[in-house]
Length: 581
Image: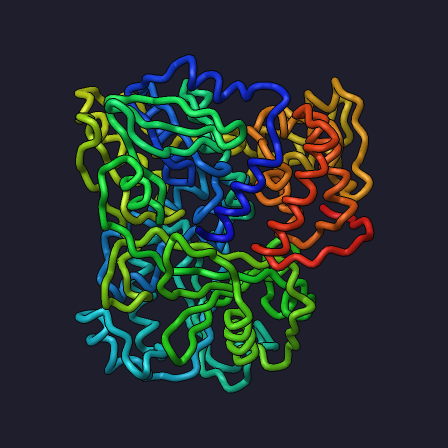
């Protein structure tokens, strides 16, 4: 059993909710639906939203918190995957860049354009090995790509991703101009190539918006509910908060549990061997010199071994990742010292004048990608595309998702829904192609419209507070503004950019079950390294007040939260209050 699972189990044991969870009560009262989705990561949430918007009676369960697991271990990128061209995955690249361009329009509150630069140290390197990689998907001894190979790839990438000209074409610059743009780059480089993709400033909140859209459309969902077996053609599930078990049944069962798809199918008595994930690790560093060196751009760094590391400025920090090594979903996914050494070595090669040390690391995380079984294929060449496998469970169709990535979640949900609708013999009634997501509805995307929005909503709340909430929640900020006007709002002592009423509203309306849900997913406090011992204590009091915890439950949540953050995320807490945004 993994460290993550054992901590989750321990965490569940430390709290018995004082009041029944309304989402779980709803499932118990309505145990049958047309579709049951197992897995509340981004692909499960997207499928849930898509089905609910078609008027399908759909239920979703997630054994942990929503948008945890693999979905919480991303590189924060929304991208077409230029490197997938080398694998011959042209369909995936085309779909991914189309979805990237759509998300820039449908989720502008959380998805932002991002300039990306590739430092290049040779002209011809990789050309001889490229055909071998393309045909065999095996790593060769010298795989660093040179300027000519990258130029060909970016020209092809442009042809897929232009979106009518709204996305700029790539640019190539020689050494002199490259160093003029980014003086901290290694002067030994020969060229840089720059193109545009996009960044998710808060993936977990974007995924939550997707799920909440599905709930608003009539779907039922509950987190911390695990599929543990099969009973008379139904799915036996367990509420991990109370330990209670009950049975859910559906005309169609959809398994979107990511790397754990085979384990879920095994629990249902329908064993499969679809999956073969790889581990991806990341670190977040507070290094002003490195942040300044990026000049606001993501850096796409390639090592001589062909592995790629991304360096991305985000939230005043720098995110560095990722690894790509085979992994078992039953093992703990923890960023290691070896991973850190690898990141530091490569960053130092590209920014030799920037000093990095472990004391600057404020957060670490790792996850397992939901990749298909790949046997002896090199991890970096395993397909990032997805497919839907069809089988049976208890007389009902069982659809299992194999693969999938953040960028294509909407298209994937659409494809899964089309398959379900065909089984149900129902017609599609709504399209999500241009449908805004959550707080992206009516989100102001220019400075004048942003100022107008803030001014019009600054009634009973200061302009600065409205601006803060708009940045944090998109246009869903109106819900928080209304709660603040009605409540007795007080700034938190340890995180003064958050307030008691804001946190209370978040806990009551966003399915918060544990304190860790707030620190890791509903806010970015842990990600930016702002968490302190006093902050955990203060938040526990507020969250516990909203959820009706006893003093014993509150204390147990504090202990569990500290253990999860130190064990899984490399956090070393100060015992002083922090000023966090």
